Image (tube, rainbow over all chains, first blue to last red; front, side, top):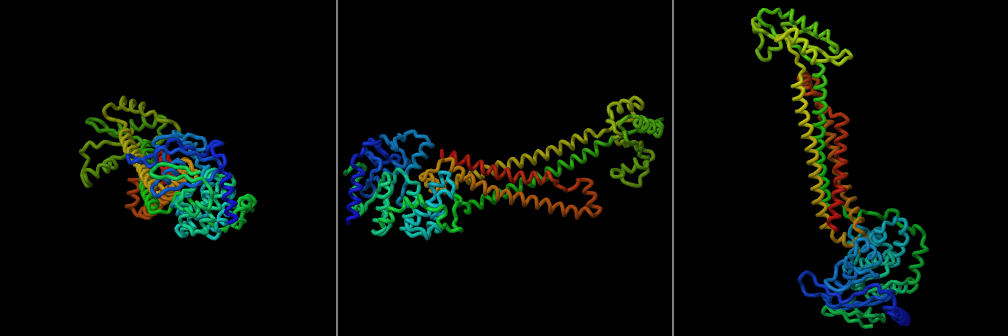
Length: 242
Length: 321
């Protein structure tokens, strides 16, 4: 428990002066609807400070995934202003978009590992798409795979991995390029509580190294373990609990 | 556990170049799945199209080379026709025409067809055993061009008309040559047209296949985008995959076409040994594709692969845009 208390202090120290620097993500009065349907998000405004750690929570269907997709720039807001790493995303060029995405790591709820690539290839993907030679990142990838407990499974194709192994592979893929911003959608949803806590420590460690972290989760167990800002979505509106 | 968390970043930075990575670990597999049933079907379509285009190109090459051979041999010969007339000594007219021809520079050889030879030429139309002595059968002098100089056929024609007006005429086979040339040109043009159509069909097939692959791999494309791949990287991945399929299809199609021509050439050589085969060869020329034919078949295979790669890249770029 003493280790947990230390982590709480660290996490709270990270968010002492949120907004003092240029925010990593900034939403101003963002509204989002799919097609002609009702608004999934209404007047959402918040800032994610550099090196901050926060949870995004709310009931199913509250718009957590949509909010993450907006930050990932895979959908554009119907109204309002979204800026990521200081770039206003409306009308952003494809080149800049790629540059911004390379500074983010994402763990999807459904993992989205490529089934025809081995675990090693999946984790190495963010470095490979940057055009780097395989020899230049081999050590890094293997090290990370061993660290998340997949050292013996690097040969395996995702369909042969268990839910927990897939989750760890997805997390390793999100971390491998040392992102400035990590988005994780229910990252502990498919793992036992022990591994869940270990993954949480991994995210905190990454945060300590300077990465801003947003974890979307329902799991009050992990939220209570860390004293961090909570962004609560309900009926399309956001409430921030500092 | 906390020891692990603390060591990871530093250990990653200080790790050796190859931390015991298994030698047989697959590392750079294509990002777009290749060995799918749709991929195999596309390779088969490209193989069939390349095979058909290869056959057309080879056949056009055979026609073109044989037509050039015929034209070459026919153009080397011209014929003087001497018509018998009432009160004329046809042998004297023949001798006169022959001497005019021989005196002309560029005429290498002149051979006067005897009366019996001239009558024998009519046998295919009139039958044999007929007494043709009462018929005014025209007599022929076959002239072979050559002798180191170019013959002035226009002047020869004028001299013959002046010396033997209404009796002697010169046939340089120009009309026949023109028809032969037109027919051969039309066939070659048809062959080229079919090859172009086949390449267009290949391009369209690849367009549909690429769209299908993009739709089927939507998740792969999305993940590649999320991990920081730009459109060009994704387009290149698809292009590499489709170029590979095109290369496989093109190689199989071109290989089969070359095999078909080689087999047909062997069969034609075997059939040529008999008298009938020799007649057929005299009439239609040799069944030999030649290096140009084989080269054009290989070229079609290569072009089909390139078309596949380029079209898939353009389709992906348009799809992503």
